Figure 1 (cartoon, rainbow, N blue to C red):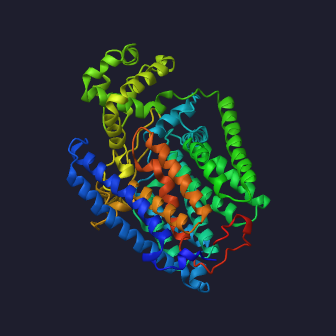
Figure 2 (tube, rainbow, N blue to C red):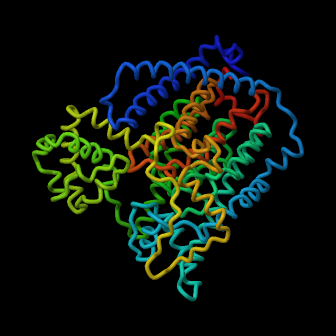
Figure 3 (tube, rainbow, N blue to C red):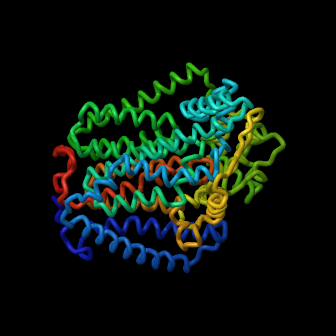
Length: 546
């Protein structure tokens, strides 16, 4: 049943106005302050003109969201139409799976055998030398290393070409399977055909998604597992807790966390919201999510023990503090006097942390650190960071926001987008062949401009900040509709985003979970209110006002 608020016209619906106003205020603030930061690299030039800009943006964004939410309400109020033969075919998971492969394989052939760079080559050497580290997800390291060595062993020349192709092929099948599952899931929930078709075409034909399917980084499989996890999370709100559903949820949750540590951090951040919103099953929800986290820790600990893996360096968690200290010393060298214990001298020696500072990425300030001395000096480093904070608060905020601009403000320049390079492992060459060179050239141009075929606005499809704001808007509309399961799924995605804000750099692949999941969750909002779910819902977990 619809809420009374949902039946009112948009311009007198207080709940809708509030749902639109809150994200509009946040967005206007971000655009005002981050716009100034992007232009002048500091807040020094803020003036009353920026206040006027904030008000104009607030009115504009509020009006757009009120209109958008009103249109979405009208869509939801339409009577559901019977499923046609075309709808059944286009919503069939196997058909979608084949369609996606038909769209993606030609792009893969243009970049054969796939991408191999950055963390991938580090993980390969870790597997080859049996020198494992928890810095990278061990499960992904094992999968990548096994595929690479299988190809190398099968090659008379000892080339790694077929090994990389094997991994990319497996990954492409996993990604296509997860997306096909999502489209079938939308069909079973009654999402209109045109919405499902639009999402399917977006995944298949958009120039953004194809390159990731043969990109050998851990983020890709993690991203599609996030998609499946969020959909199964929604099912916990909608349907009875059958054994097969619980087992499937636990398996997906554990796998997702094993493929990237951000998963468990986001799960922990989501936990209180899930417990709060799942009325009638708070205790069982708490137990289920805690069991998922516990099984992840048990499985990961088992991998660590079997592989004798060393712990990753703690320097990664210091990305933000080191950036803030470096920017402070760059702008105010006299702040070095606060380092009374010479912590920076101990960790950096003769290297100046201020000269290492790069506003877009924290790696340059982490690489010179003496890792052998880091652990025992972390308390002193954090103490120095805290002493600098009161008198350099503005600089700290600037350092944090400048590095994360691509996550906050659409149109901000990223440190990198795709990475089409293939780093050659020593002793095991990878033969790169483009079977469709013209298509490869088209995608390389896309990588440089993030616009496809000169079509204006296509760069926004790949903009990480756009995905974040779509997620926030989706959460706001779900909150207006009191769809708590959907709210929890969006909270999980925002928790992933939050963990990335504390990371070393703002790039697209860290947010692939949002790219895969947000379109599907927004499509879920298009279900006609009169359309029931595929199974009997559990009334105790539904909002009594809905």
